[in-house]
Length: 372
Image (cartoon, rainbow, N blue to C red; front, side, top):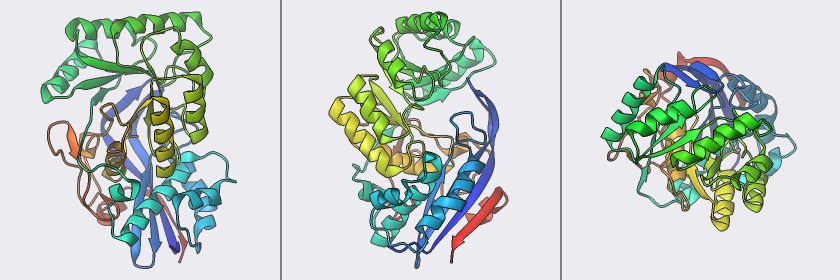
């Protein structure tokens, strides 16, 4: 499959309300959209590292420049037969998994379009429904949070994720558990606790008493050693998220028994092939996986749904329709519930959901075309 052209777009869209986490508050999301063309066929992808280097060292405009100046030129005019081959052509560019994911995932949807297959058929998932959970950021008050949680359980969600940070941890969990003593929760710390600080470790040991499904990413990005060490001291499974951005780190986490779960965000780990490899490693090691998103539009979210239908996906996923995140959507169709708290895998050939260029155009902050 010869790569004729790659189009890159930085797209900015406003959230319904700012998304607040341990690393700050975001009023907008800024994503990298990619369109890859071969002859009359096309594939789309979306990569969302956020607008600033807060979740990780990448950000949308930086990923755009890496993809424009280095990755896309390395692929144009090349006949690429597999995602592994594509990754090999980019291996000498260090890091930058979100930028690499933009072109790698576009290759998958382009290949699906060329072969007349769905993305699910390309990756070998099991067609059907996938279950998702609900999640809430840091609220203005415990009362507001408890109201939101109650609404989620009333809708039928079987689990809720709670963002956790200094000053919004133990007392927050006490308030939640006093109202919801048996429901399934987990917390996401977004790397905000220091494994060398005895006070931080004491807080996390208190968290262990609340009967949570997992503690997601308690320590700094990449610190698999501290996670492994602390996992031996608590009963609650640790989930690694930001610390896993390549296949070798999943191998290391499995060998060190650093976690009970890994959250796979396809864009964070460099694309679909790396996601498949990480899931395989985890399955062999007895580590459960689940799919997370980065507040993408339905282009990226629909691809996450396809990944969530793989084997070894054992926990309700972090995928929501973009209409719940944004007052304005820019896609040619929308991600719709197949039943309460469930989405069905796509039957559409190629990219499951694509941008509507007329709608997206007014949100484009930067663009580039590499190739014909």
